[in-house]
Length: 422
Image (cartoon, rainbow, N blue to C red; front, side, top):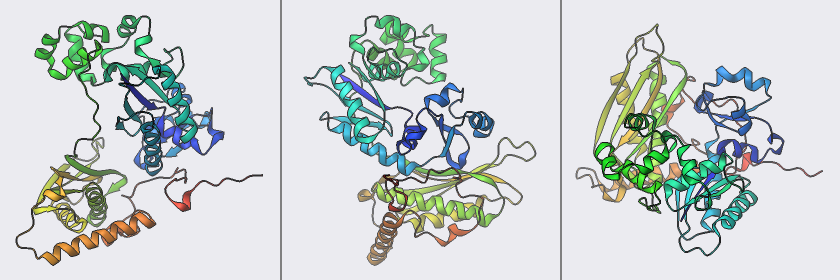
């Protein structure tokens, strides 16, 4: 038996946590540069605000509805996610943190009634973290995911908790679920399944497994078997190692100055190096890419990339920054108006597996590690980019726009919420 615990409208719930006055009001959270809607409260969904919608198209609708609009605050969301997962780990011996707001629990061997346990999970997470969650329980991970989805839509008799095994007419429910709404089936695969005559979850469950494998591969066969109650997907307690790291951003305005573009990729390469060291990885190469606005009909679209290899895999942000800026110098076209750039570190490996440089002195490697250790320590203590590369200081068009930040944090002393007792 598995349980999937999913935080309700997670980003919006985090913003409401320290503002009880927002209960009942529409709340939306915007993407980087305040461009698109990436989270909506139920009240905002009722206004017809689509996920991923450009904010400017619905700004007037949100204003008339007295909606609260926030820039994304990833430090806050990450910390509250960690707290939720810590609470969930107290219920069972084995969990799988699936995403920032979802977690699978292995209920095998639990003596408690699943529904009673689910209700206790909902209550404790809300009481200890302030975040509302829904719980779906089933014999397989695919059915647990579906049970969670149905719980959020009100199909369960106990609100946010639904035990798939206790439902009276499971076939009818499966027949009402479009095949594209199943975990692991995207729209393109769903279209292919429909052409094959499989339009809903019930039809997929009843399809012949070997024929599904021949036509669509082993992934679809496993989903069909899981819909039958055969557990094919095990709990992953240890996340698979990262294969690549990417840092990119769309700019708030067109960037035509090469110095400003270099400043942007300097910041991205520095951040990529920080991620490498935090995860104990090293990068054998760096790819830098730039692109103009594909929707600008007045200008020719330009998108290009260049890859720089290193003699040995590195964690040093300085090495990454030099490679990234050299890449920009090769890619930049005079007269182009760039709207996005990024840095990709492909095929990263564990740092302990990286070979030493035969032609580099031992002292150079030690000094590199010491520099990066100081850089990370200062930025952890005093805030990200307290220490940064001078090349990042050029220009004002590329930094992230965050004009609607909540100004609340659980990880920085200066941004802790204030409580006043009258």
